[in-house]
Length: 184
Ligand SMILES: [Zn+2]
Image (cartoon, rainbow, N blue to C red; front, top):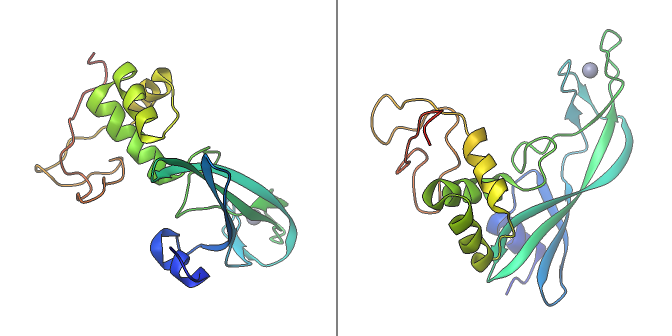
């Protein structure tokens, strides 16, 4: 049981986020969080901005916790870009340590689904994922395989660009079944 917000933050929450509240509805855990730095760089021109335009809540599925589904509801800022030559006037801050742009799940969740997809494929992978508390369709798992970039490692066990995140207890790039595009 966590006693303080600091305990929660140091447990598994990326540095970019601050946990505001945890809630449990009997089936799923919701982590209410916000970004900790009121400044962000424009994704187009890279100029740092502290001028806030507004906020919105981004919802991301995360790895299950003790069998309960987990989702993050993150209060994300939108900023003005004040660079006169930049075409972007307003931009949303990125969650670089948490999830990709437009992703509906965290990088951790995505990595776990990729591991399952590569190990078991669509149908069996989706069944295992459901048992673990990850709701995903067979087609989504197959898409994870198709979307994964492939590159040959220079030596066995060496991580290469595009590898999914390392599974718990493993180094990145360790233990991958490598498949070439076009291979069934
Ligand atoms: Zn800009």
